[in-house]
Length: 139
Image (cartoon, one colour):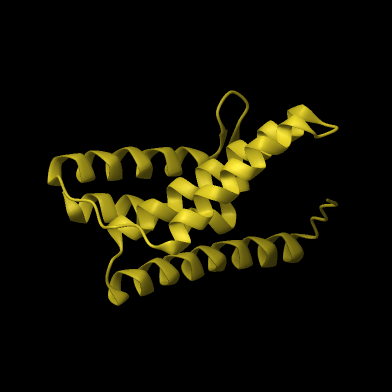
């Protein structure tokens, strides 16, 4: 199960650079879909293994940051934007925790970095193909 959970996390790291290529109106981006799958598989692995690594200072500070961002909803001018931002921070905090749990060794951490770089190549190839086809996109 550990290999399956890590592969799901690897796939998530891979799609991050080009997550906006595919969007579903009701669900969001491809990155969100793969992230939800990675989180679900990772959570199942953690529950079945019955092991949790002790959290470090970074994790505690991350939690406090997310809580502080949530509290800022009380004094913000744009409550909807603040809630959306807090939800994003919460998702990122869960992914930090999942990486902590599933990639404890340097080799696994390097594998995740490699997955991200490989995903960047997909974006590079897409950009080159659009350039050669004369397609311009304004953002």
